Image 1 (cartoon, helix red, strand yellow):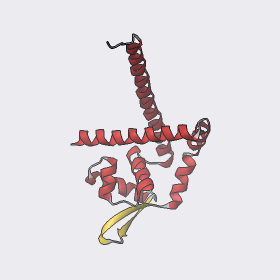
Image 2 (tube, rainbow, N blue to C red; image 1 turned 135 degrees about the vertical axis):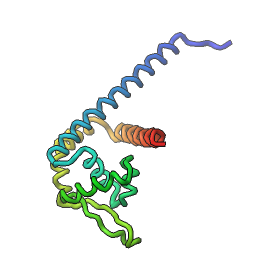
Image 3 (tube, rainbow, N blue to C red; image 1 turned 90 degrees about the horizontal axis):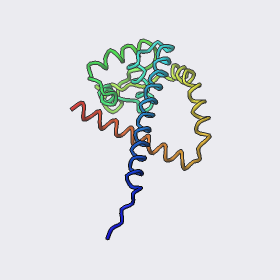
Image 4 (cartoon, rainbow, N blue to C red; image 1 turned 180 degrees about the horizontal axis):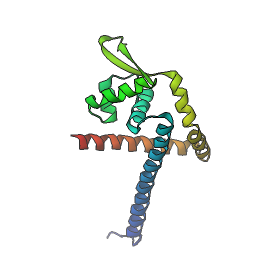
Length: 162
């Protein structure tokens, strides 16, 4: 005979509620970070998509325009206008790829990168304060969770794009 606890449905309900709350907080985080990025973009005179691409180049670059378009989920033809604006603004340089002189790679120019650090310095300081309240193991769990959320977002984006 198997014993089924009356607490199982309650635990399941609590778990569903906790997961729903977590998802709601992630949506709230996405919105708030979008607002912050929009404010930074406004200060830097960049469109939201330009700022996203600049961040991708900064974190994953140098990149080819095709790879940047793939990472940004944009059509390669759209990338030309974005890169033109970023280059005119002194944010990026287009260089010949040393391994294939016919190809181009995009890199962030360090002079303007300092401006981004300045614009995000308030948020970075606040993040340092938040992280100080967690031990190394907790930071590891949070980091793992966020990596998995990013991977899920990439997968969902790819599925929508297919």
